[in-house]
Amino acid sequence: MSTTSQPSGTHEPAETRSMGVVHSALRRDLKRTRVVLESPPYPDDARRRALADHVEWMMSFLHAHHTAEDTGLWPLIRSRNPAAAELLDQMAADHRRIGPAIDALNEAASAYRTDPGAREQLLGALDDLTDVLLPHLEREELEMMPVVAATIDTATYLEVESKYFVKPKGFVELGREAHFLVDGVDEETRDFMFGLVPPIPRFLLDHGFKRSYSHRSELLWDDGPASRIRPITVEQKKTS
Image 1 (cartoon, one colour):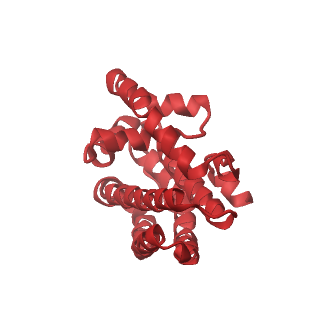
Image 2 (cartoon, rainbow, N blue to C red; image 1 turned 90 degrees about the vertical axis):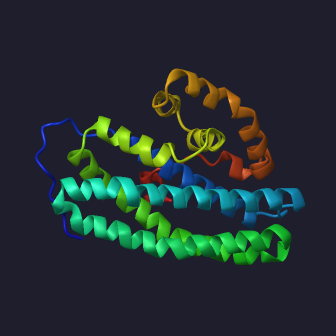
């Protein structure tokens, strides 16, 4: 893998750790899903339907996340840092490979919702997605985000997040996402993530959706081993 040179800007590197929080949450719940699917007793009807719904929700979240990168963040970096073209091309190629795996996992989740016999199909589709997704998330965090940080400042990064990652979504969707992202994080990371939101909507996001998220999580993970899985960082993923 060739290194990508970075512009010699005078700004402080952009604070991009929210990207790592997003990735860690995805790794966490993909692993939780696998643990539930592989651990007898297998999900009953209500839990099976909830698990299928959650997989489809995660895939919708992931697709929207990649769309925001493709339409907002990556074009900005390409325009300001031509030396990043090779790495950006790899990001785009990764997204093209991940897209069909998202579709296949959605199809398997839909089948599993109505047929418990589709559990192996869902596990296979989960394997196929993680095979292409996890290396991409790692590459993005370790290689792409340092280039992003060197190319734009924090204010610009936050503007892109707001315009492309946040504003296209409704408040209810953002409430569910907020608790998904901070599930299991340390207090400092939680404060950082909620600190990105102005005080009034922050209060509503934090308190208004906590009960529904907790109820959903209890149905999905119960008090079994999946419930004890915390957000999985790049370092933890590499050693697991």
